Length: 96
Image (cartoon, rainbow, N blue to C red; front, side):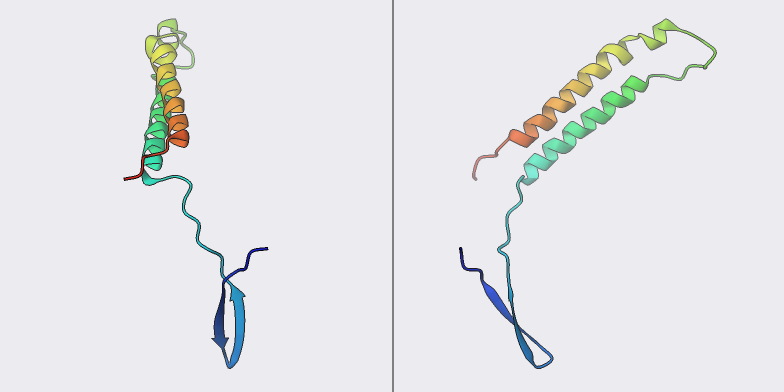
């Protein structure tokens, strides 16, 4: 078993040794989080586009429901957003 570093803490006249854990770096870098944020933004835009325009509950207009924005454009944004988020998870920036 590996030895742990200990620190001595003096509290009200008594000495107490507590083990300290080494700090671990973050899994992702700042670039990964920025790319992930961009992917989340694309996802949000896609889902907002899926909501489409306002339509009265008593009306039925297939042109609004099955329009290009709701069916095609929003799907492209959502798939692109999922792709960008997946890319941000697997992307390892080079050492600089």
